Amino acid sequence: MTPKAAILIGASLALITAGFVRVDGVLITLGAAGLLLLIGAFLLGRRNLQRLALTLRAPARLFADTPFDLRLTLHNKRTLLDAFNIDITLHLSRQTNIVTSAPWTSSSSTVKLAGSIPGRGSLLEHPFALRSTFPLDLFRHEASGHATHEILIYPRPLVPREFFTHGALHDSSLLPGVTPGSAPGEPRGIRPWQPGDPAKHIHWPASARSMSRLRGLRIRENDPPGFHPQHCTLLFHSFGTSGELIRADRFERALSLACGSLRYLRDHSIPTTLLADFLDWQPLLVTTRSGMANALVALARAERAKGTEAHDLLHALNKVPPAHSLLLLSDMPTQSWSPCLPKRPAILIDIKQFRYGHKQLNRSNNK
Image (cartoon, rainbow, N blue to C red; front, side, top):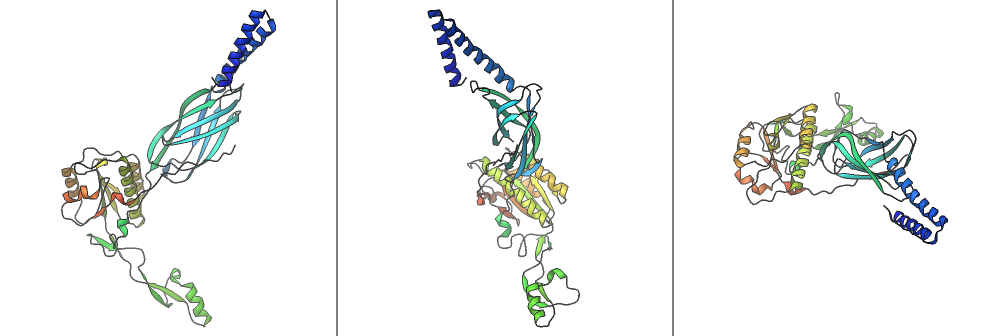
């Protein structure tokens, strides 16, 4: 009940009371009309929210903090009464509240949104609430339900800075098992064109200057390519010595680093195996697109392992072949678990290297 309804009730009761005291039928009629208006507004307001459904269209797979388009459609399944002044609140993926409105809905109304979801997750149903003060703003009515649409949100990919520190993963890497990379090396200089040189290596500004002097084309020459690991194993664990604080945000950040690492290695055609305690130490091979998709799904649905001990980590390390380049990642600080490791060449990824905020979901309405 809104303040307007309370004032109308009080005025109606006062008119009816005054009508009986003064034996005035007009006052009694006015008071009764006010009460009938309240009853009619209440019944019509309840009817306004009945047989309404909400559906949404959005990408089924996406990365956190990645902009995407979303459409909300309010369906009116009634045949005799349109829906008016409906306020919609959708709790998308149980992370972001979307607040919009549909002033008038005959059969359906569609709202177009553009934005992003801050965190990872995997949900099929998204709760929503419908609110309305129609008619006359006398009563606030509310209805709730769930919109069904599966959205799988992968962690936001973050590439560890250790990949670029002193050639940790390329060129001067001390990790075992290296192979020549496919990317060109450092630029060496410019030379005249020779038969067999590919056209993509032509240096067009230098060639233009050379041809203005009635000479031939010029070619950009690079050093030989660097080296990449033949196979990498990304070992993810949640082990830490006693006394270390367990933080949920660090686990989410570690998953983002794992996602960025797998994407980086995949983009450079480096075969990779994901070995994680939240997967019960079952190796997940990431060499094909389907393998990368399976790894992303595992990261999106991952839950922190609570019982990882030092012997579990050592046993997992023993499962990594000696010829594999080893990457170690944890949601615990490096100094809390690195002393327990055997002496083996590896890249230790520090969890404290990134800080990032969450973006809000922006919206724009198109009816």
